[in-house]
Length: 235
Image: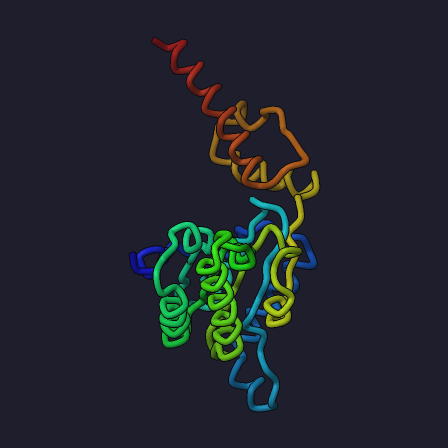
């Protein structure tokens, strides 16, 4: 299997206004976008732009959506690669394929989004061959990050930054934490996703203390249940 077979070319635009971010994260991402919009002017002053970003924190809290929104705001293509799939697939010549992916992202001035980034910090197995392959992969990615072009973006995401090799973490100029949303932010999210439905369906009981993804699954499941009951009553 070729590693390119695992790349997702996501062309559906995501607007930054559609991403639920706390104030600090919104400021950081807006600053990042502005840096790349004015990259030539900043470079003229010898100022480097941040183009290696680590998104970390709770699952389902918007890391992937934020990466897509950054790509949309900058009118850049986004290449999405889940490193868990790379490791699980045990693809031969992984390091060489990763080089080709980084080179493609660089040529296209794209956003390269590596999800489950912590996977490259885990041993693939107990035998010497697997451990050696992992070491080579980590060393390759360190080199690829170091030479990634300024006019492209590398965004990596992990739910477990504590297990990522410190040598890798040092390569990222910007680190943004995604925590579970507050009740206030979840209320705003519920308001948005329930807005298309009739009023009596927008007043469903709301639950708090979990991610946006979990809130969406919960709300839509309840709405579907109520709608089905109404449809069954009409039969």
